[in-house]
Length: 310
Image (cartoon, rainbow, N blue to C red):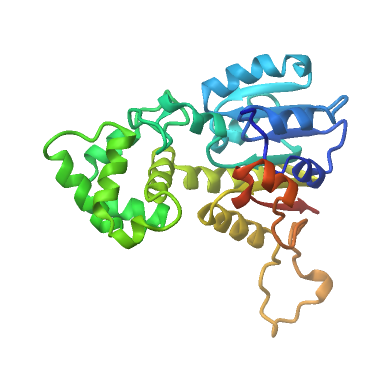
């Protein structure tokens, strides 16, 4: 199945692309948003980041016709400021992020992201990093595993699942995705197993977030992205679960809220410090019925955007 970028026209429209502008796609993936952005540029330039070497290599080929407008950067978006500074870029007209794992990563059994395929537990977006899902499952203590599953997967049965994993690995290491799925199943009550949806979904999400430090990277990268914006520049972010969305919503709210001033202080309204950003989206933008029919990944997607005004 051909990969389809989620909320593509909505994201490009919200960025209000200037043909001569400098833009950043912090999450290249398979290049759908990058292509749409670059096609709107004339004398402008686009810097596209991804820490997955496969995404860079594939996009190098797929985007060859736009190579003069795009610089591909093999790096985590938490290094946005430094990587751009190394290329002489200190301010930009827009940044977009399409968070989480791309469909090709999920669909490649060897990457170990999916509970649908049997593969060695891996889940690294950057395959050069050391920590893998195998390491987390086989070296973290029961309390640590419980915390990861509860915090990043919002898994109600985090404790029993962690206990079962620790018990199992005392005999043999937990090496593959389907081994882990069976352990999760064995730790859950029948009423949960009979529900709609895969019983391992939340634990796999939690593992992926832990392995890639996704939420830490998001906080750092999003703050840097907004700091880099010129007046009139916009930042647009697509999230796929509540933990990501909460971070984006919180950071955007802080940026668009003026600093508190004690009402009793003798300060004129004209002297009060104003917020440097305004919200572009009051509520998150979600996929329309046509996209929802075509693309199941769009069901949980939420798009938010802000603009720097001063």
